[in-house]
Amino acid sequence: MPFQIKSIFFSPTHFPGGKFNPYLSFHLYLNDLLLFSALFSFGLYLWQTGKKLTIGNPPIFIGLIFFFLLLEISSLFSSDKIIVWFTLVRFLELMLIYLLLVNDLLPKKQLFMLLLIALGFQTILGLIQYLYQNSLHLSFLGEPILSAELPGVAKINFGASKFIRAYGTFPHPNILAGFLLVGLFLALFSYPESKLFSLFLIALLLAGLIVTFSRSALIALLLGITGYLIYLFRKNLPGQFLRLKISLFLSLIILFSLVVFFSPFLRQRFFILPKTQEWQERLTYSQISLNLILKKPFGLGLNSFTSQMANYAEVKLQPWEYQPVHNVFLLISNEVGLPGGILLLFLFIYAFRVCLKNKEKFLNLEQKRLNALVFGLFLSLLVLFQFDHYFLTLYQGQILFIFLLSLLNSCDTQKPATIKKIN
Image 1 (cartoon, rainbow, N blue to C red):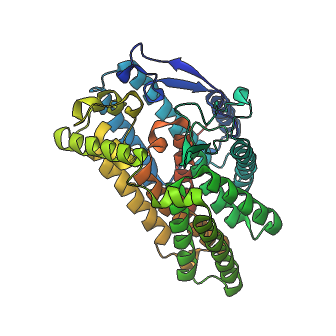
Image 2 (cartoon, rainbow, N blue to C red):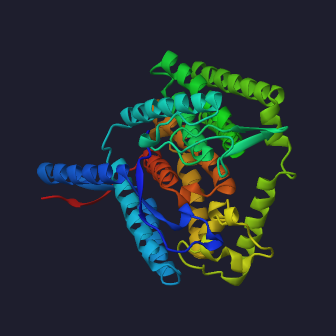
Image 3 (tube, one colour):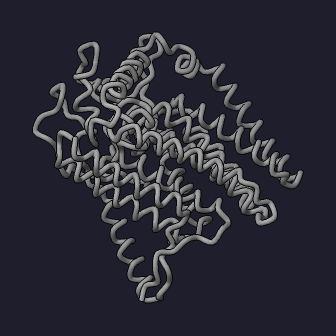
C-alpha cells in the first residue's frame, strides 16, 4: 500500500475528448503480483494443514457473487470489451483478497498496525509535498509529478496563487484522504494498547488529512466519529473508557474548528462552493448521471459511463471533464443498472444492522469496540460514496473498500461459514 508502482497494461487507441483518460485504461500494479504470491502461499498453507476456508459473513459473500454476475451481464452491453474483461479479472482478484482478509492471513491488530505505519509514511510524504509545493522525485515509488503550474494537478486557489494539495504516492489527494480517515479510526481503536503511539499517529494523520483539503473526507470523519461515540454510549461501555473517547473526540473537534476558522485555505474550500469550476463540473456529472438512469435504467455496461457521457450531456464537454460521476451509487446504477445500485444500498443497510444488532450477552469489551469501529467507518464510507468515485474506479479505492467490507465479518459473532476442507 505505501507504494503505487504500476504500468499501463492496456489502453485504447482513441479517447473521448482526445486526451489520455486513466478511467478507460487498465493498470497492472506491483501489488497485483504480490497479492497473487500471497494467494498462492495461502492456498499452499491450506492444502498442507487441511484447514477449512472461511467465506466470512455469508450474506456479504453471496452479495459479492451476485454483484459479479451483474457485472458479467452488464459487460455484454459495454462498448470496449477488452477493458471490461480486464475489469472482471480485477474484481475476481478483489474477491480473493476478501477471502484472504476474512481468513485472518494476519491477526487484525497486526494488520492494523502495518496499515498505520504505511499511512504514517504516506502522511510524511504528503506534508513535505505541501510544504515544498512540489513532488519529491519519488516516481519510482509511484509518486505523481506535482507542480502548481502543471494542469491536472489538484490545487487550491487563494487569490492569484495556487497551492498543490498533498498526494503521498496516491493518484489524487482525495484517495490519500480516504486512507487517512480509515487510519484515524484505527489509531483511535488502538489507543488502549499503545496510548502515546496512537496519540502521535492521530495528530500526524489528522495533519495529513487537513493538507489534502478533502472536504468529503473531513465531513465523513466528523460524522463517523460522532456515530462511533454514539455507539459507545448506546452500548454502555465503562465510564473511564468513554471519558477517554469523549476527550479525544472533543480534541479533534476543537482542532478542526480552529483550522477551519483560522485557515483561509480551508475556509475557501468549505464555504465558497457554488462559484467554483469544480463544483459546477460535479453538478454537470450528476445531471448526466440522472439523465442516464431515466434513459438506461439497466445500465450502459461496465466501464461505459466515461466513454459515453457526452451522448447524454446537455453541453459540450471539455477534454478534462470526461470522468466518472462523483457518486458511487449513481455510477453503479449507470454502468451496472439500478439492480446494482439497489444491491449497494442493501449492503449499507445490512452493515448497519449487523453492527447495531443487540448481542450484548455475546459481546466482550473487545468485540464492542470492534463493532463501534466498523459502525463509524461505514458511516464515513456512506458520506464518501456521495462525493467521489474512486472506490469503484481506481485500484487503491477498490482495495480500501474490500478491506472495510472484510471488517464486517468481525462484527458478526456467529460462527463463520466455510467452503470445504482442503485435503
